[in-house]
Each structure stands twice: as C-alpha cells, then as structure tokens.
Image: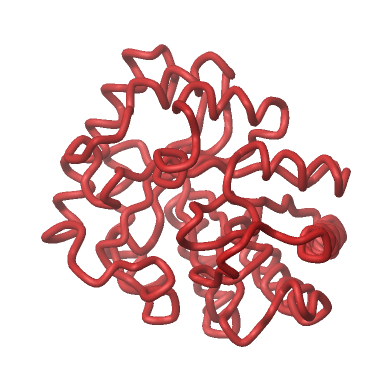
Length: 283
C-alpha cells in the first residue's frame, strides 16, 4: 500500500512543531501518513520538537531540498556534498526516512545548454557523496528530475535513472514529480514505468501547482502507472500555497496557486483518493 503524504508548504509557511500540531489532526482525517519537511536551511529545524510531534501523531517524515544558490554543485561538488551531509544529519536526527529533491543542483540555475560531460561527472560525484553520507546514517537518498526551465542537469526520469545507475548505490532512488513529468515525459504512466526498480518517491503536483483536479494534469495516467508498478512508497501532495523566498524565483511562483490550504487539502486529497481507487492503487 502506498503512503499518502503532504508537503509542508501546502499547509504552512515552514515546518515547526507548533504549526504541525495545528495541521496534523486535519491531515490525518484524510489518511495522511507522511509529512515532507523542507530543509532549505537545515540548521533552523527544531530536532527534538519535530521528533516529539511525529511520535505524538504517529506520522512518518521525509525531507527535501534544492541546493542553495551560493553552492555551485558542478563547479564545487565538495561544497554540495558538505551541505548535503549537514542536511542528512538533521534528516537522521528527526528520524525521517529519506532526503530527496534537487539534491544535485540549485533550482532555477540553468546554463542555456545541455549538460557537459564535466557537469554530468560532477552530478554523479555529488549524488555519490550524498548517497554515502545517507548510507552511513541509515537513510535513503533521492534524485528528483526537474523541468528544463529549473535546471539543465537532470530533466527526465531517464536522466534520473542514468544518474542512479551510474552511482550504483542501493540506497539511491529516482523521485518523479508529476508537475515536471507533465513538461518532460511523453506520458504519466510511461514515465513511471521508465523509473522501473529505481522508483522510490513521488510528488503528486497539479500542472499549475495548485489544487489537484483544477489543472490539466493526467491524474488517471499517473495513478495507473503507479498501480501497474505496484508502488508502495510515498505519494506526496506538493502544492506551493506557501513558498519560501529562497526558492520562489527558481520555481517561478509569484502569484497564489490556491486561495488557501483548505482548498488544496479538502478538495485535493479526496480527488487523489478517488483517482487512486479507480486505478486500483491502495493509498
């Protein structure tokens, strides 16, 4: 059975134990079993408080990030690995299951050209270093392909699979995101199938990043692909009702994607449950 999750920024401006105690009772009513905690600034996370609230509500945690703008992952891979190691330390300390996202680069940084051999080598080195640091802490480590407007390094699921297979670490997985798939893949079900055995985590995000069902995304295809893959990992609703200023420009989100979190949750989660059930995907 897949695990239904929600990205923190769909319901709050940031992850804090106090905020979580406000929204978790609401989300649990919809069967949410996992919260994704953004680690854009890992040092700001209240580790003890986060562990306590996760135990209190019996909720799993995962962590995500894009590398900060002051780090050039392809020019200075060691700095990227050092940042990932700090983030992984926080991930482990809050008892989260994985760190994923744009772990290989900065959201919004593009070269205007395909990745060079040197850039591909650097991406592999960063992911290998992150995977090693994750393995030392008993964690899994994800690679999320992003659309061509946000990065030139890893755009398609096939690109992600190539990185994962090159690194060859058992704890590394591909993390498809339906928003990016809608731009880069030939189809939702086909994209999920392309991830194959490397499929480890999924972002369920509408084509306009807003309320699931109020955009043009092929939700039936996405759920069909996940059902055919017999996926049992996290399927996480990602909607940027709130947005951290550190990634707003990179994501090109400068107008509201929904009026309020209730729109995304009270409409979006039942919509996801309905499409998952139709596809035969236990969620």
